[in-house]
Image (cartoon, helix red, strand yellow):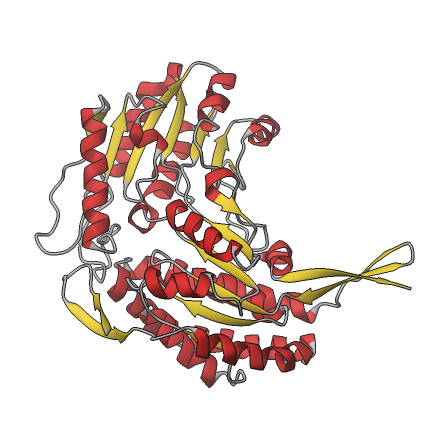
Length: 448
């Protein structure tokens, strides 16, 4: 049995990937390799990861081309974000290993961190290389081995990564790749008794299934799931900047980003101004061939995803929201959706509550600051968000009130060392930096 991989811009089959018959051989290989890998010094593991980083850097353009072909990100986004972020994560992980290990002494107890053992990693199609490296790098750094199942929609970058891992000289069994659909391959991995921790990124619905399967073996689980993040623009903020950055964040990767600020919250006194600015910003997002340098929005990753997004657009109109931008022309071939901006969106409307995962922005009025915080916290998700104000201290105070894993203040830059993850239906556990490293360890107390 094979999986056909489609180019979402052309709808043509560009590769066929075999389905792994069983994950057990990969799990057994990982278990056999783990003790020796864990016994390596931090410096030795750092050297392995540094070689992998250097190979990703050397093959960055090739990897970007693969990602563009398999999931449709414009080449500029694929090179800067889809490949650039994994290289940054590997660099920060290497630096972390090269620093002296910090031990904690509590009374007569020495607190140390051991690897959990074998990690099962299940990754999505929207950032196929980054989501893989965000799990692989800290897991390997901590002394674990990994069995990885990429999305069947975009597995080609994982296959190339597997080749680069071998070229980097990592021992056999340290990184093992299995391919297939969520069911049965992903389900077998999540429920396998030889797995010590499952790290999953994907939809909330799939995350529930992963957690349930892992529970049978009392396997640890880390879930990075959906989001419906709010961009809270306070009345004194620079609305030109806040709206422009907000639209860019919402439309990044054609809206296929779990942290996307898909709800723009604007005070009623400046609402019409913000809508006008958002429409003008959205009009600049050209849709088309992702290999064309002028393209800002490529296709969605699959026909199913395109149809899902279009159904939400229809539900938004039917629910009374006003489409102030959208419905523009798109190529006849390919899984394209023109960017959409909705105004007059009820905070409880479907398009304001459910993750759409496409280039769709909802602009919502609020009366006062308490109302803005209530609306921002008024979904089941809690992954990311943003606050804008002329006063940084004021913005930080509002950010502290938001129930979410990460908040950007006045467009604060992404920090690959900061913990990344959510609360509520956005999941639990953290990735990146020290917190991401610790996610793949277990704590031991040694009494002296």
